[in-house]
Amino acid sequence: MRKTLILVLLAAGVLLGTGVMQSQQNGEDAKLAKFVDTFLDAYWKFYPTTGTMNGFSKYNDKLEDLAESNIEKYLAGLDKFNAELVNKIARDKLSPEAQVDLELIRNLIDYDQLRLEKIAPQQLNPLYYNEILLHSMSALLNGDINDAKLKAAAERLKAIPGFVKQAKDNLKTPPKEYTDAAAKQVVLIQDYYKSGLPADVKTKFSADYAKAVAAVDDYAKFLSGELPAKSTGNVRFGPEAHQRTLQVLTGHTLMLNDLNAIATADTPIGPAPVISTSSPTRSNDSAVCAALPSGS
Image (cartoon, rainbow, N blue to C red; front, side):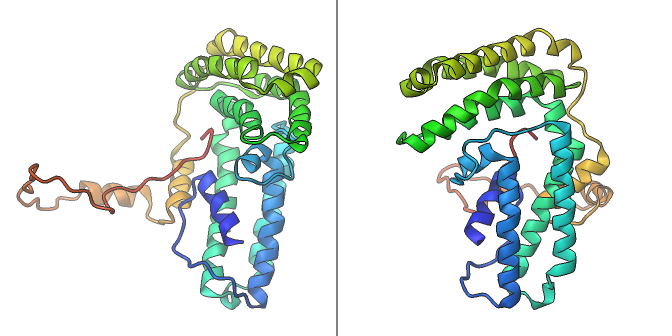
């Protein structure tokens, strides 16, 4: 359970705690493990491309459905998962390691709700659609190509025209910077569909392949034609959402004004450190890297 959960959390950009891998479980741990399996299945079903990228193949033949009704259905499901964590999992009965897992999954659920409701890449970030168009096929057709992958690729090709229509309908007022970047990037995606896909995909599913390429081309025209005039938004998503993002991604509960007070406090400053360049060294603790989720 922990290995799969960590992969999901890394993909979502949620920083991990320091729980230790353990295979032993008590009864409450087993309940949590079953809950996580059920949740992850719903998660991969909503994010099938991310699932493919993380080696979960159950929904390889699906493409993201970002219709408003489907997003609302998924968010309602997240509410139910949250309620189940509160009402059906006894935290004090979990092993210390499982308690870490519980907090990780809560963070993931909280962040996914925040992301879809407040950050809203489905409405404000065309790069989100770019990534799905590219990785839905490239991750699936990476490595050895077998019949199962080809069959899944055929189903995803069929879904691409509908996905492009959703993108055009959903994108409201993205920041100009996002639109400009997406318009530049989509040229590479067009090239991948026309030159990078395996020959078997092009020949065995020629009709659906042609429709998918046409849809990607249409999306590219949209990015450079219609969307720029609508790109009046900005990258700011408000103090409340920003605060929640910091709390979920870092696990810290300090409010932004507390952090500001600490940063601007009149603290005595000592002498500047002496920096030697004669024998450069690197500390393993010199940097922390947090991977942010796609489209955020």
